[in-house]
Amino acid sequence: MADMQTGCPGALRSVTTPEEDSTGPRVEQQSGSRVEEQQSGSRVEEQQSGSRVEEQQSGSRVEEQQSGSRVEEQQSGSRVEQQSGLICVLKHRADEALLRCRSLQQLNAELEGRAADAQKDARLERRKAALLETRFDELAANHQAMIVFKDEYKSRNSQLSEENTLLRTENEALFSQKLRDNETLVRQLQREIRLNEEKHEAAGKDFKLREHAFPTTLGLLNTSFRVEKEAELQSKLLKLKSLQQSQEAALLQRLGDTQRSLNAAEDESKDLKQQLRQAAEGRVLKETEMKQMIKKLSGERDHFMNLSIERGKVIQEKQEKIQQLKMTLEEVEKVKARAENRFKKEAEAVNVNVKVLNLQCALGEAVKKNEKAAEDFEAYKEHSTNLLAREKELNAKLRHMFG
Image (tube, rainbow, N blue to C red; front, side):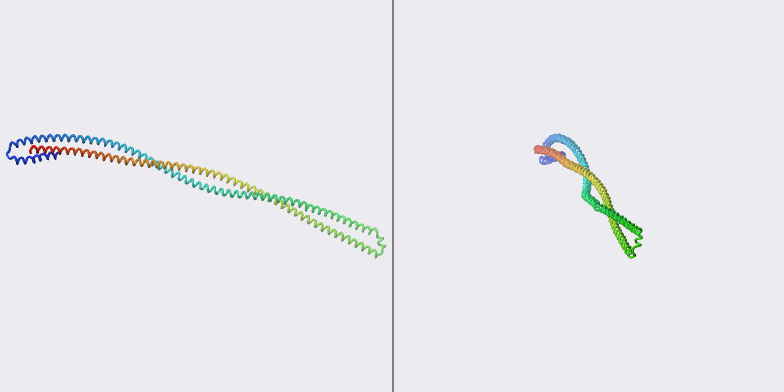
């Protein structure tokens, strides 16, 4: 407007100066031109006042547009605040999901550690169970060997008992008969010895009686006959004595042989009885040892059986616990996967929402700026067009007036 106001007098000067040069001394025309100049000035002032009113109207329009843009800015600010609140809520949810995910990861790590410990315990229990099974198999094999040995011992014991009974019967059949025969023979020899002693005593008594009964007869006999008779009697007596001595010696020898054989039989019987007693004692001792060993092995077998059953129960409980931990771990993995997926989706949604909100805000601001610039440009264009049109009209009127 200032440029237009400053430009108008210049235009007037440019119009009036050639007129003054061309008119010369015309005074009346100058006074008329002054009146016209005053009228044109008043018209210009009116046009300027109208342009000022239009400028005020355009300013009010701009203010209205600015107030509308402020309202839109306030609305967009409220929307931004709402979106920021939503972003804060989503961020809070994301933080909570992250905390849950971390807690689930920690729980997962703890469960994995427990599962590893449980697997180690299970491996140790399996090793112990395998060792117990091998020992139990060895004990079962030893027990079976002991049963076989016991059966062999029983069979051997029965065989030895049968042999002992047979030996006793043979001993009774052989040595008892021999002892009886020897005793019979000893009694018979003693009887013969007594008979021979009685015969010898009878012969000696007869000889003495004959000597005492016939002294006269012996004295009357011839010396030769008596000598022969005495010699014959002496020879008979010597023969009888030698026979008696030989019989006694033979009987004594037979008696000694019988006594020695009897002693040998008694010694052999004692040895057999001692052997039988020792065999019976050894059998009883072995049976006692076998019973104790069988009892001990049975106790160990029962102990290992109970221990194996308890270890089996413990292993089963550990396996069930491991299975439960695996199921819990799988559930935790599923929950973790769902939480991670939900967290990713929420994060993506938050990122997308934030990007969309940012883009929407930027787009709104750009649209507002563009609209405002377009409105300003249209207003300026319209104002400039109006001013140019008015200036052209004014110049045309001035040219027409001063032309």
